[in-house]
Image (tube, rainbow over all chains, first blue to last red; front, side):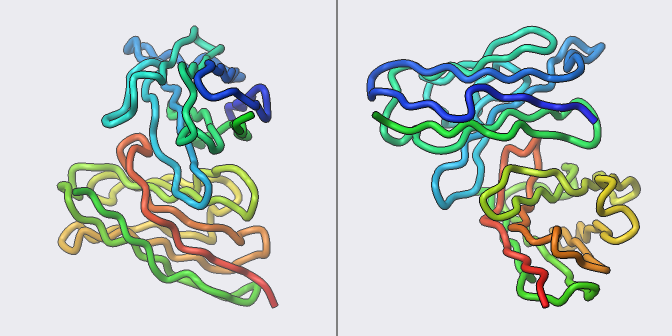
Length: 112
Length: 114
């Protein structure tokens, strides 16, 4: 199984500042079709997860452009510019390259 | 508007069975692979099973193979998860999802306990 390792496990950010979350996969997520199958999700307190970024760097519909995704074949970053109160929650990276699909352990974002 | 509404969760004893349902609306159900993802209390996300457009192909995580069965009824725009021989470690909120997990239901809680 592909292991997804996130860091840090928690981050505390001052509103208006930026935050970065890292995710590393145990295997390249770059498919032969040129697409990198890493996804980012946010689970707000008491809510279902929501998709933020798909295929490494594509912003999901309705997601503010303060969110961005980048990376290589095995190392990925989610960046949140100008953090707002509504960004609080747990962020997960996930790989949809192959079964079993797997997720990182999550990064909890809190406000200072 | 896309809607995924799960039902069928509850408290069940170890070794017993439970069937979850997911009613889908707001999109062409038969055009998409569907999946179940679960989340144990205070834990992370765990993919459980996926099913192809017509139900002809199914995929499971190892820990549920032989115990869980994913199925769908495209005429009813519904997804199902038959869970047999339930174990305490199956206790979780089960989410119905699709589209690269772009859309999620509200989840249904399954508690396996004596």
